Image (cartoon, rainbow, N blue to C red; front, side, top):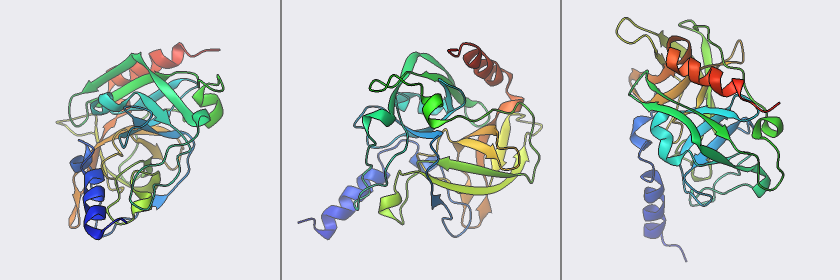
Length: 252
């Protein structure tokens, strides 16, 4: 029988399993994320039996993007993931929705706010032989700068301290862009969409265009205000070049 003390210890362990947990934050007094099932967005793990990690998004048949500080867990990409169990432990999808990430293909930089990115190739599924982008779909990436005030959406696999079955399962939320480049950091984009640890690497989708404009990387919100931060793709030439190079070598 699971005692209350044991349950608390088990869940606390889940909350601390990710080194990225403290870097993400809820904007305002309440966590407004809701469960989602976007097949284009995967959970990144360090192994087939991993217990938590980051988020990756397909942008082509084989190309995907995430955050550079997620490099250690960019090994397995799980799509169409179930909700977590009653103790907050992640549940894995079937083999047909699990893909390995080509380690030799990863181009990344863990350079802090505005300079944190990763581009990679996702290998064909071992069971079906299919490419992830063909089965799960993919987003287009915009090299055009979005505007302050634009509504963006972030979907990913963040921690959840309020609802255990949602913990590290896919959730989504929208919010405004508050900064789109600055004099001191042209490739920094800030927003007020709710995120938590595990959302690292989530693509930021412009709700008007449906295209990826940035990659979520750092927290900064609190119940009193603030904003979360990301790498703005249109202002980061090296990142744009890496995305272009990956897409140029997509299988026909």
